Image (cartoon, rainbow, N blue to C red; front, side, top):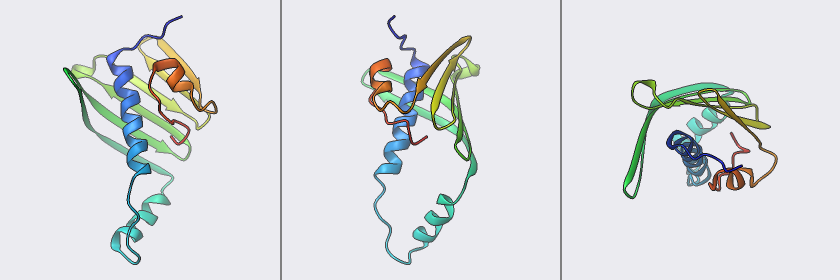
Length: 130
């Protein structure tokens, strides 16, 4: 069975990849800096949420979506939707599995397999950290 690569699914995986890349490449803060203190405070948060809008452009193609991210300890819920709520995609993870829902379609991924996303979607993303 060939996986379907809908724009919303690709955008969802790209968002997660960008989020993980952003976390992985932050430069170390200077000792006693306000950012170091703030970073430690933020790192201690178990429950948080974020909402906004994202846009991705790749050559001739561009996509945008509304984003809602809710984190409750190891449980993650990310909702992405296009204009007027079309092509809504929901990502849910408990730290062990990832469920990607689009309409009535639900795909589940075992996050303990490091290359599962590359195998299933062609996107090389490390999702174990969400």
